[in-house]
Image (cartoon, rainbow, N blue to C red; front, side):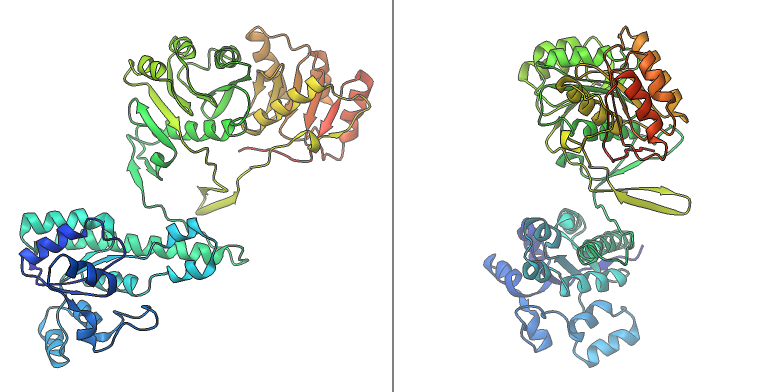
Length: 508
């Protein structure tokens, strides 16, 4: 591969952390340094000689620093191919060759996250830096580009190990990273300007990634794009798989509904909750959640909204599970659970739920607002003559939270803030209800006195008829069918309170 010696370098960075080592290595190798503004002063502060870019361009930094490097004598030195015709033009116009560019862009995303001040946000859109990155990356056959502080380590290693020499593979890899940086940066800026625009475009860019053992099945490759460390501290266990991550996402979305409430536990399998319960203590919540379906719980994902204590940990340890998620772990509980090295323990730091969600399908992508609506008692509209009691209202709201996070068609049966039966992913709402009743009875629950939640309306009275036979005492549903009255009339005949929310929670 074509080896090139770095003889000159242009350095213009926002972040100086770790830059001092690079400067000293360049100085050791007698590399001619060019720089601007604060970076120039930083280099001079290290006692290293550096030439101001304005000495090359014969123009000072102008417009409050908006224009410093945008000049043919800078970009000519970057874009010139090291061949006779281009080198002759550099000599004719007294343009120095630039072999290395080190850039760290203005922190646009950090600024956007920290302020709503439009002037501050706009000023953090880097123009000169992004142009330097693209020019150097385009000419990677002759020029080395360091596009962000994340690559400081790589260039430092190259300088130390190869004494300022780089081969084509080194330069092409840094060029790849450069265009990754520039495309991500532009996507973030576009997202800011596109907010609320009627001209919708699908553009997403995530820098962080990790290759997974495989995808949904062993013959499929899988990659996670995102920063898990921002949401979790992984305290124990093996590497997370594709399916683990899908289930963890479902678990976090569900428990976010309960995160500020009384002790709550949920057990999920293949993204569906097979057990959910709210109780006065964490141990009671765990036992009640497990009772919902202790068969499906095997190999599942467990999540709670409370600090994990030793007593609960010891009970949980009797079950094989994949992942346990909690806001914190008591020291003795963590030590106890960590004895099994493969079991994953996640300490959740941020109950983040994306405002928008998307998935690939056909030859494109669909995107939507995430279903963040959670109904309260004020959202309940009474449809029947009979009114639900306070206890029934609490159970109806609990059931409605659960039904929102199960695959459609789905029905939830709940009693005393406990999921006692659910039918999900059914092609018929009647099948979903029959499945819910069957599961409840199979696990020893008496459906008499339970409430029922449906993720969509009842087009016929068959579901309320079946529910009545099972002893269901109250119903919550979205309403909106042209035949709502048929179900209302039946409930009135039986004295069953029914409320509607006006909000459908389909989940495909």
